Image 1 (cartoon, helix red, strand yellow):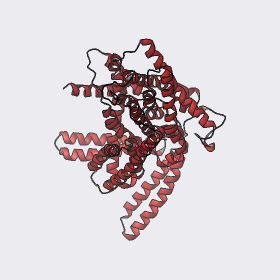
Image 2: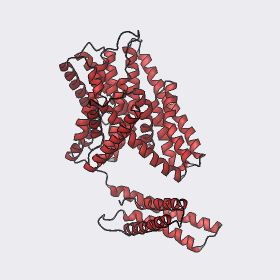
Image 3: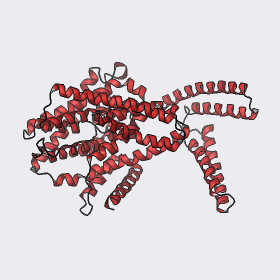
Image 4: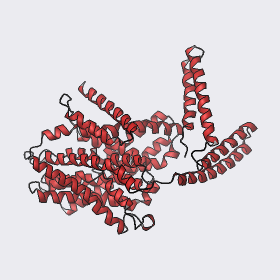
Length: 525
C-alpha cells in the first residue's frame, strides 16, 4: 500500500507542477526537482529507496528510444563530428579532469574511485537537454547537436564507469582491457541495435492491429537494452541504434492509425517518466545527507570543486574545438561570434542518470569486506552536481539566450520548403489520380472532390507564408468548421441522451469528429 501511495503521490506532483510551470512559463524540470527536495525533507513522508536498476533499466531505455525515434538520421549524419566530439571526447575529458583533480585535492580518495565519480558526472542528461532546448526554441543546429550528444554520451560514461569501478575494487585493468571493454560495449550495442531494428521493423510491417503495434513498440527499448547487456554490450547504444533505425522507417512500415496511436501513447509515457525522474532525484536528498560522515567544510569545498570542474571543462573543450574547426564546420559557423559555443557550453545540465550511475557504485571492494572508499561522499557530489547544474544553468540559460540574441530558425524557411514539396506532392498525386481513373473510372463528382482537396492542401501550404495577422481562407475554414462541429456534436449528444441512437453509434461518430477536429487544430505557420 505504501508503494502504491508513493507512485500515486509522484504522479500527482508531476501533473500539478507541470501545470503550474506551464502557466508561469518556466521550465518544468527545475520546479519538479525542487518539489522532490521539499518532499524528501518532509519528516512525515517516508522516502522510498531508489534502486539504480529502476532508472537504468526502467526509465532510460524508453526515454532514449523515443528521443532516437524522433531524431533525424540525415541530421545525425550531417552533425556527426560535433556530436561525437561532445558525446565521446567531452565526456572523457570531463571524467578525467574531475577524477585527477579530486584525487589531487583529497588523496584519501583513490584515483580509480575519483575517476568513477568523473564518469558519473561526465555526461549531461538527455531529458534535461532536450526539455530545455525545445522549450527555448534554440536554432535547429544547436538542438540537433545537444540531442545527439545526449543520446550517446551515457554509453561513453557507463563504459568509463565500468572500467573505473573494476580498478577501484581491485581488479587488474590495463590499456588492452580498457580498449577491449570499449570495443565490446560499442560493438555489441551496435550489433544488437541493428538486429533489433531489423526484427522490429519486420514485425511492424506484418502487424495490422494498432494495439499490437503499440505493444511491440513498448517492448522494443527494454528488449534491446537487456539483450545488449547480456552480451556485455552497451544497452544505451543498442536502444539508440534501434530507435534511429525504426524511426527513420516509421512512415512506411505501419498504418496511419498505428502511428497516430503510438505517438499519443509515447507522448504520455515520456511525460510521466520525465517528470518522475526529476521528482525522484529531489526526493533522495534526505537519504544521501543522512549518511554523510565527512566534516562540513570538506563536503562544501569538494562540492564546489567538482561542480566548478564540470562547468569549466565544458567551456575548455567546446571553445577551442569551435575555433580549431572541429565542432562547427566552416560553412556552419561565424568565426567572429561566440554565440553558439557559449550557449552549447552552458547547456550541460545533469539529471537522474547521473544519480542512478552513482548509486551503482559497489558497497565493498573485491574482498567483500572493505567498504568502497568514500562511497556516500561520491554519491553526494554527484547529487550536488545535478542540483547545481539544473538550478544554475537551467534557470540562467533562457536569460543567456536572450542576452546573446540567439536567433531562432525562421519559420518561413520551413514553410517555404514545405510549400515547395507539397506542390510537388500535389502534382504527383494528381498524376496518380488520372492513372487510377483511367484504369478504373469513378464518378465525376468524386474525382472533382479529390482534385479540389489536393489543390486546397497545396494552397494551404503557400498561405502559411503570408502575414500571420491576416485571416487566410484556411483560417476561415477552420474557424467556421469548428463552430459547425460543435453544433453537430451537440445534436448527437442530445440524440444519445434521448435514446434515439445507441452509445455505439455515438462513439463511432464522436471518433470521426475528433479526427477531423484534430486535423483542424494544426497551428498556422
